[in-house]
Image 1: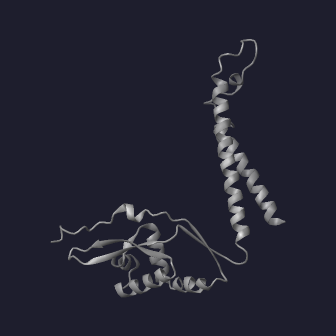
Image 2 (image 1 turned 180 degrees about the vertical axis):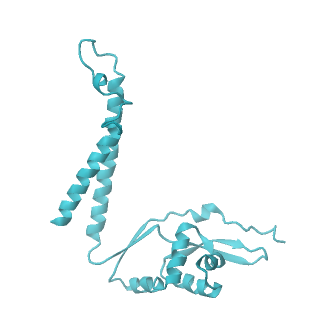
Image 3 (image 1 turned 60 degrees about the horizontal axis):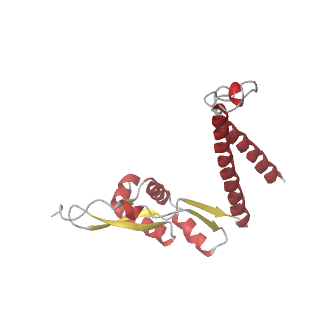
Length: 196
């Protein structure tokens, strides 16, 4: 009988899109959220679910607690929208078991105005993407400058001094050096912005 019922989860059901969740400390739901995580056992279960979705009995084993206690904390976490039932498995005895997964990849609790935090994250993401594009262009330019055979022999070529395989400072390719330098500038600008 146990071979007739599926015992493994369908990975497609567990790979739902999850993202960043930002909540205000002043929100009404924040009390329930923080209350559901006030127990050490609840935090262990929640952390374990971020590693791998699991059933209540698997989580109870991982946290070294009773099944009843694990179900209690999972219910609280579910009410706080921190976990959800992602799938169903069947035990070897044919019993239906819920598979729990975290609702979000990351959770941020903000005190004060979260719009400035989100704006800063969006600004930073745009700058990092621009740096990545610039790094690829720098790497490409150095690689094509080295391979440029159309330059007359009398004129020096970029490839004569720097080759695509010759790293900057002896260990960094030009594109990586450009990206690292850009990150340093971003960090300095963010530190100055925070200091102001």
